Structures are given as C-alpha cells and as structure tokens.
Length: 190
Image 1: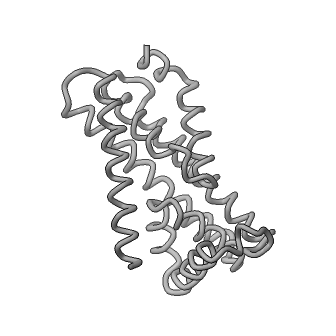
Image 2 (image 1 turned 90 degrees about the vertical axis):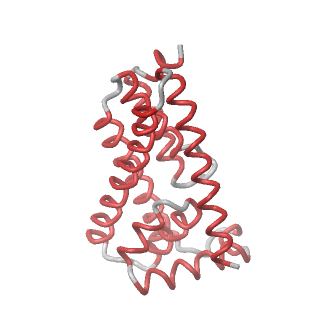
C-alpha cells in the first residue's frame, strides 16, 4: 500500500511541499521525503529519479529564496524570536561566514538545517545581489536534491526486499546522517 501511494504524482507534490516547508521549519522532514522517493524511484520505477531530483531541487531553491526575501524585506530584528540570544549568535555566525565566501557558505548551509535558515535570512538582510544569490542557491539546491535522492537510490539498489524495505531503510539512514551532522555541528561550535 505504501508503494502504491508513493508512486502517484501526488507523492512528488507532497515531497515538494515538505521540502519547501523545511526551509522555514527545520522539523519538517524534507530530506527524509527526498531520500524515500529516491529509494522508491529505483526499487519500483515510479516516480522517476530525475523527477524526484528536479522537484526537490526546485522546492529547495524556492524555500531558500523565500527566506532570502523575508530577510531582505523584514530584516533580522523585527520579531522577538529573532532577538533571542541563540538566534542572534546564529545570525552573527551566518553574517561572518557570508563575508568570507558566499558560494561556499550557501552550498554548505544547504545541508545544515538551522544554518540554512540563518544564512538565507542574513543573505537577504545583507542584500546580496539577487541574481548571484539565486544562481548559487539554485545550484546548491539541485546538488542537495541529487545527493538526497541518490542516497535513497543507492540503498534501494544494494538492498534486497523491494520498495517498502528500501524506503524504510533509506529513511533510517537519512535520520542517522542528520543526527551525525547535528552532532558534528555541535562539536565544532564547542
């Protein structure tokens, strides 16, 4: 039943909405959805892997661009949550990183949820040239989407048991990778 539901065109739309929502709310499982559909693409043939990558890349770029627009129009101090100590530290960190290498930071931040939000807000507030920003963030989003979908596809290709097993294991691997990235990020800050 799971594979039947995930093989419909609606699966790509739901995945895209999750990825878009993940730009603002890091608890939304955008990465997991992309990885799961990547596994399904290889294990069952639907949806096509290229469509998973294209939809996830477009949704990720749109979400990042929306955060950029919030930063550009609202700034980074308007709402109370933006003035908390933790958010201020994240925004200062993002500002420092953007000053040293915009492309590197945008590509790296695409893989770190809280950093991604801070970087995109600060990029907008700093008024980084929009065409340059959109080109960099689009390339980063497609690279991220290809990575996430390929991770699921690789698991499905090497793991016997059909689509359901591939989806479940790929979700587990995505969660484990996310936990490792969070752990490494916390250690590097400390």
